[in-house]
Image (cartoon, rainbow over all chains, first blue to last red; front, side, top):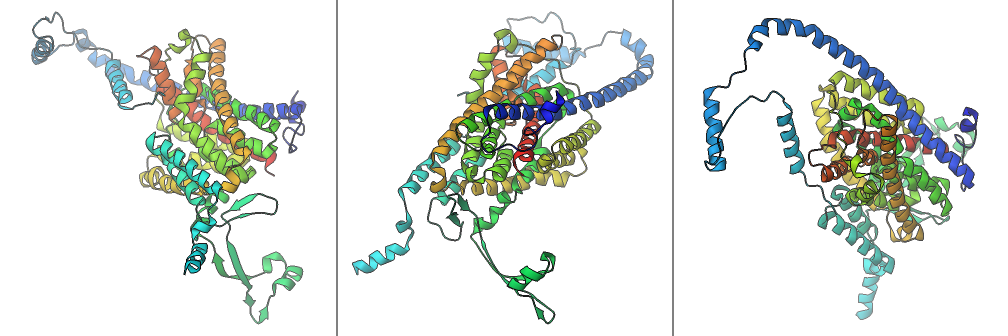
Length: 132
Length: 421
């Protein structure tokens, strides 16, 4: 199989006006070269990436006990919201809804994705992509 | 008196105008309108269109153009006058020197170099200096992080080179030689500098038409790609949400630049100039200790070269060479190349989902495998949001997008290694 791919004229010379079959084999080999090149980089990147992921996991595992142990008793307590934040939220809600809404509960956001999402939304909406 | 006036007119540029030149003025006008009025790739289309206009004016001192005996139109040539150089008491004459003296022993003194401004500047294209230097800037501007975080998208960049090879066959069937067919096919890669690099090497007579087609279609990415993307995907596939990309460390990015350079140079040495400069630019960016160099590569170097490259390419668009049936064929083949490359990327993404259903990719990012950075990735993002407004595909699409740059350079290397020697 390999001999077929590597034999001339595929990787050697191609005539100025090749026959159809020659042209097909030439194209196939060209795509093969591109896939081999980028596939090799993919494999190497997976190997390198696995090494980095493992070392990152090891680092975080090593750092976790020292960080969590002393904090554990504090973490048991519910995260508190300063009273001025309640006031600010209530004022904002009052202004936004013209006094027709009531704040029932306020809880701190534990996930950090909302701000990231909002950031992305702001960035994407600031660029205008033409749709013609 | 009237005869004197007519004689004077014969010395002006009016006497040299032809109807073909006027047609080219109109074409240059259309390109300028697309660039300025419509905002299509203005950074390149403006210099190209302006160069095209200048190429079809009877200028003096700008560029020398002539038709060779074989019918090929050649521009940017300059004359060098030399005289034998005296070495001690012995005067080495050219005739005897050629016969008796080894070439390394012959000495000449350059007396005079005659040529217009762009006879010299265009040597940057002819000697293949500008495209690799622009790649330096591209590397300095590109964040390969999304590709490193999801390296399997390299396959999408590879699959999106399908159009190059299919178009090669189509061009061959339309009567183009293998070298010309390869130069036309590379339009499908949607990478201007690579298209110029390859066509200058294999088919310089088609450089103007190929460059114009490549940059025009790059600017039309938001128009050409979406119908193909919709045709080849289901609504269910278009709303696939992909996993977040992991954070890539600085060291990983540095290793990436070196590894890609080594692999590509070993596999396709003929693409070395492009790949080496791309990765040098990227290494400068990621190492974070060469800020001044990165800034120059990202701004001054790439901007100056873009002006020179664009105008040099435009100046090859003289009416005698551009107004030919071949140009029309190239324009048609170019859009075929682009469409097939887009389809190749999308279909490869669908195939990846069949093979790896637990970690699917949104097939819309496959189209970004053509290397029009970052326009193709933004088209994936826009199309994705059309069906799911909370789906952010941009960073995922940047992976195949930058992989396409590498893939096109590798394909160009393959064409040069098999056809260019």
